[in-house]
Figure 1 (cartoon, rainbow, N blue to C red):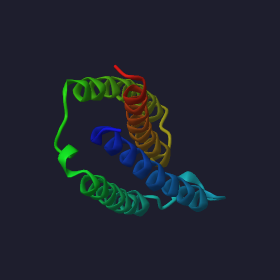
Figure 2: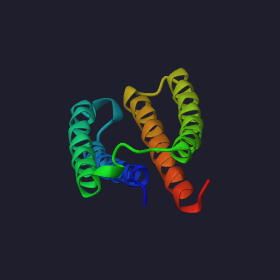
Figure 3: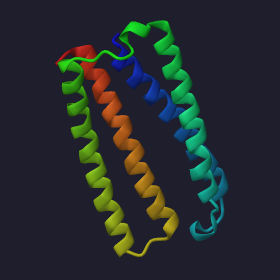
Figure 4: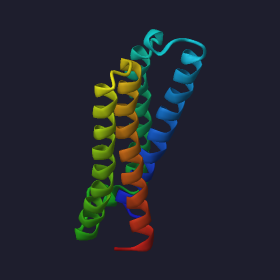
Length: 139
């Protein structure tokens, strides 16, 4: 597996762990509470720190295990990154439209914020997953 594929796998794991934890915390906080009274804002900020820590430690480990690959990338890596970004871009676009409709429907800020966040996280997960598929399958 190339360094870029390992890097993608680390980011997928970090996103899954961090936002999985976040989702469980929000569900716990929102249990039986009206959406406009859920104090989710601190959690949004708190989840970023573990995400950065997990990703950084993961990248340090994979770089230390094979330092010669850490800075190398070729045309195949660029093409895979481009294709992954296209998939992620479509998801962000759909999420942006959904969020726009939610705002026009005057949903609570809680739902609008989580639609934006879900769109961003799902786009990154789809991008990374598609990149791993392309690394395995080939371009």
